[in-house]
Length: 442
Ligand code: HEC
Ligand code: HEC
Ligand code: HEC
Figure 1: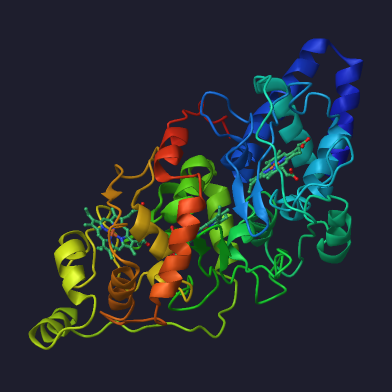
Figure 2 (figure 1 turned 90 degrees about the vertical axis):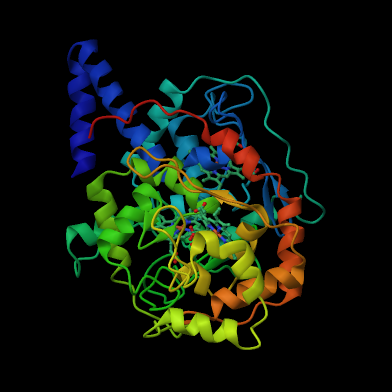
């Protein structure tokens, strides 16, 4: 249907005045800009706000750092020589113009599900409205055997999901739009779905219960987005999900780490219709067996009094002296000023990677067009590994929270990964100062 319309438009364009073709171009560019916002190419491909898309900061992967390349229309260092066909192949098959295979740190297994219309609009946007930057990006140098890119042909043959997005006639159009966005452009699964040892996602759509069941990438753990009651979205409404993606706040929870960046760079620009479609789709995902538990106690403040009047618990003292002023005696937080820790799915997540990272580095809540003003959580890297484990075990097992214990060793592992990561909060804050031009009308 869309294909027929575009063929018609091209023919109409060729047969009529060039002014009409210009209009067609500019609407493709505007649509392509929105596809870029949905798919967040700039999250990886932009290191400096002054040079959008000129190449990004390296991604730390299990096999070493991988640099996102320059995708401005520069003919030498960017994608200036890419035809639409070349561009489609890079995006959907993971093969660059010169034939070399891309590492799946570039989320082509998700973009493989983009419609041809979205790919060509995105191409029009990058080629026509992004300034060429005549500069090479950082060079990826991986150790043997990972430097041999032909090995990725085998990876693709084994692990590429391969199927196009097919709407399901068992569901309504809103669900289908949500499924399309989550699986393809917005590539939520590339962070939120667990990966197998060869880095492939365990699932790419709702036909598997592993899909969006929580993933660990760099030192961030992207929690379960399925219907689970403790660490999933079982207690969230569709409106909560919409608000979180748009402003970084919902249910006294706040987006942080690379989810906060996702909200600032991408989520806040989604149309309300698309946000609702995503929430509608996520709410259809079933619950799994989970390791954590949440059952609010009848009186959390008397629980705190008992803890404090008795022999105490490891971490309780640290919590009182360093955290309670913001997060409250009963972990209830202070609305947008400091998130609640009681019942917070990320605090309850089986994998504590994200909460260890924020404790070490601190973070500032999302700066968005429609959300509340940013608030900062200080970093506590001066705490020892054992102290961080204690205070986290305390918040993970108080006020009705029940989550598996965190060991000092796990904290040490995450601390080492945080140290290696060049994307420090300071570097990221510089990049977020990037002012995007106004979003296209839609
Ligand atoms: C999660 C990070 C990430 C996101 C998001 C991402 N990319 Fe990439 N991309 C990479 C990395 C890393 C590479 C380099 C891979 C390699 O060297 O094998 C790459 C390579 C590419 C290339 C190959 C360029 C060349 O000639 O080497 C193109 C084209 C490209 N990306 C386009 C896009 C577009 C368009 C988007 C948004 C729809 C996008 N990327 C989103 C990480 C990302
Ligand atoms: C670059 C990686 C990344 C991408 C892409 C990403 N997320 Fe996240 N997400 C995270 C991390 C890490 C967290 C945990 C930190 C936090 O709670 O903010 C998170 C948290 C969340 C939360 C809060 C849930 C909770 O349990 O507290 C929601 C909801 C969410 N993501 C939805 C999405 C959706 C929907 C998409 C796709 C449209 C998406 N995310 C894409 C990394 C990502
Ligand atoms: C000055 C106020 C302040 C203090 C002190 C503080 N925090 Fe926070 N905390 C915040 C804010 C604000 C956020 C949200 C940060 C963001 O979203 O980027 C946050 C986020 C968190 C999160 C992530 C929760 C989520 O889903 O957003 C955890 C876990 C956390 N704090 C634990 C602690 C612990 C443990 C301490 C004490 C060692 C502490 N905080 C001290 C203000 C504070």
